[in-house]
Amino acid sequence: MLDLTPAEWTAVALSLRVALVATLASLGPGLAIAWILARRRFPGRALLDGLVHLPLILPPVVTGYLLLLAFGRRGPLGSLLSEAGIVLAFRWTGAALACAVMGFPLMVRAMRLSIEAVDLRLEQAAGTLGASPLAVFLTVTLPLSLPGCIAGAVLAFAKAMGEFGATITFVSNIPGETQTLPSAIYTLTQVPGGEGPALRLTLVSIAISVTALLASEFLAHRVGRRLGAG
Image 1 (cartoon, rainbow, N blue to C red):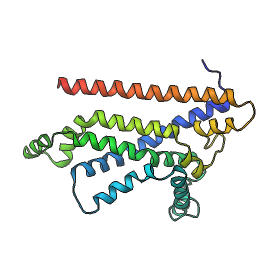
Image 2: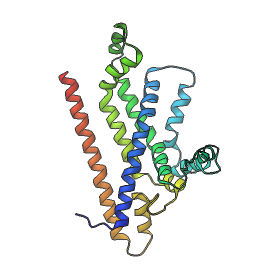
Image 3: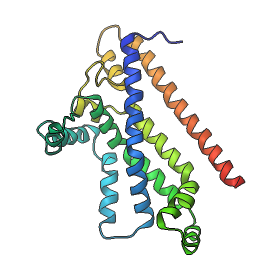
Image 4: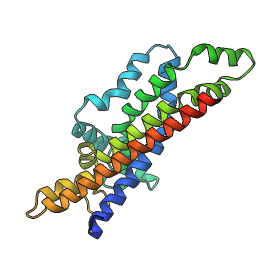
């Protein structure tokens, strides 16, 4: 059992909260955009696809800076949210937003590939039986693509757990407020005698990521077996 200090436990708990919130907040939009890219053809589709994957191409620091410009107190969106009492910059909620943006392309890509693998004839057959598009999605498309959707969610969670550049640029590195595991590890490597604590947090980060991957494989296997049995 690793003997973590209270400050280190705080960084671990904050990372888990940020990653979980980022993943859950991305599920709905990610699934919707994945379905649109997989099943619809329209002008501007390539542009939408490019915008979704833009965070994978841009340096994370650039993404964080763009978030700061947009959602900072003086930014166009940040000023509107600030009037409503919502502040994202230099808050843990801003860290969740940054992590969600960085993990969104991975989630959408996995979900899109899974949806595209679903036989379109099954959806068409359900439609000819009178099912609405929403009913077709909920009863045919989503169940059959669920393993890929789970994989996409876990990828986004893992990316959120390891995100550093965009987070530290947008919300800084405030202990107890925005200092996630990667930020805490970076801070410890910059001070004398911090190698031991940095290694402890590194091991914790690895353990969490491996656990998430194993859970994803288990859930995907269970869902696959259930679908096969059905």
